[in-house]
Image (cartoon, rainbow, N blue to C red):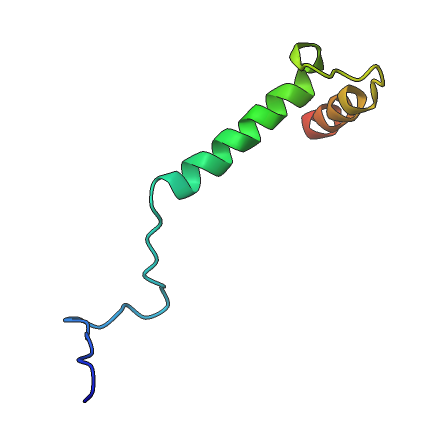
Length: 68
């Protein structure tokens, strides 16, 4: 006994994939990225703030390179 297959009522457009993501698939990674970026830019608010200023110097250098 074979299972019924579902077919599309109209063909997929050529050259495009029909992929739909749920809203949280974009929001959650974006929120995590922004949270980590804020912690890197302002490490004094983090619980375990390091005394090594390497990360802020790196971010400042990247900002200078982008500004050129």
